[in-house]
Length: 541
Ligand SMILES: Nc1ncnc2c1ncn2[C@@H]1O[C@H](COP(=O)(O)OP(=O)(O)OP(=O)(O)O)[C@@H](O)[C@H]1O
Ligand SMILES: [Mg+2]
Image 1: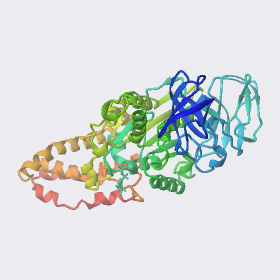
Image 2: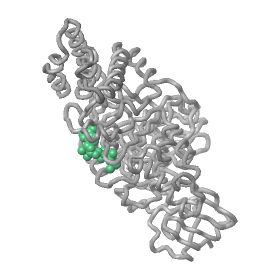
Image 3: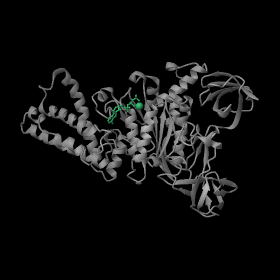
Image 4: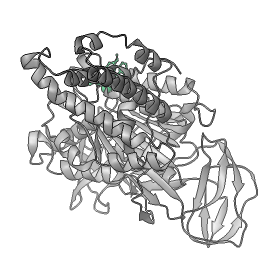
């Protein structure tokens, strides 16, 4: 009989687990935990709930499987904890392994093919209607469909088909620390439209891409991520609140429940899976939550959907790992983080991608992770490692945030490795002016950036008129294009057409000003003209 020998916060030492395997889930007198180190029959266990009340000698049972997510039609529109246990109807989910839980709801199943059909692994054999904004597809292993149930209502765990001699239900179980398999990774560069102008135009994100959002305290990480959760054009959004404030999670859920999805007419919450492990919840479940979140996204990817994982904040996840490592006496590396910090961050972002699924469809997982460096110090380990592994970085600038320039995404301190390729995509797909607009806006901002350093030293009075117009253009671009209030009913979301129109309007105005300087009009006179039409345009649908 295995029993607890020592308890140190979430770290529980157990003797007598001779038969157990690494990463197996154990039940510590009612609390779920995961074996993270084993030697002989002695195991170190990471406990996922508060361990108060657990005493040496308490019974421990190995459950025979790794930490798994229960993937099924109940996910969309739901709110879960870090182990993917529903936070609403907790009563029936008390079993610590998500994979063995049961729910007695029935779901409306509709078969997509007949008995006798040969299928490849990962082929959808049926759909579940009414389970969210997108159809939930029941995926099957490869073989010949031997039996398949007629359309009707069934509990999720009841077999709806047999393929070969294997039963297929509406539910999949998958160990969260392993990526779900796919056929091949695709290199196509297609933008994920976020509805935020500074991002879509200057620092775009591709479907299947990765981006980190570092920013000091209060610079607008959560607001930006929530804006993207609301407006991005993904089919499914997995929002992981990881160690952040609970009331913010409640707010985002309430808003998503009210807002209408412009594409489906349903509620935005119905395309969203919320995983909440806020600062008031047990710390180690944060560690698991990023993996459960990505696993959920991969599952919908395998149905052929474009999914987005939003994690706020990956720093809190890293801190949970650090906390545990320090209790286990592991030799700390940089700033107390365990030595595997870099590889753990890399492995997390590595699960993003645009792929051909096993069933032959196309789907993607895009990962957006907030990083909250303590004291805004961008040289700390989580930030520096993360920057190496992402395709894009939206760095939030404290100066911009203080000046209430929101979103405070710095256009000098950020990057998107796919910027040119994605601009070319827009240009190929009906927005012919996109790439030139982007180039001109970026060029003016960069030129103004160089000039303003000089202007701070010597003032602008001695500048040639042309350069003063560049500084004017900078102001108009900031106010009329890059600033975008999350609170504006009209402007919180901006479609690419409107982004292009606003950029075009400002650039036309700048061209008019440049022409006036050529005609000899003094710069001072141009600068004091009325440019309010630009700000008005932003608030006009
Ligand atoms: N896009 C925006 N539009 C309007 N206001 C914004 C925007 N972004 C941020 N703000 C303002 O800044 C405040 C702080 O933003 P937020 O909570 O997102 O910061 P944070 O970086 O997540 O902070 P923390 O480090 O505490 O998690 C918001 O409450 C809001 O007033
Ligand atoms: Mg925040």
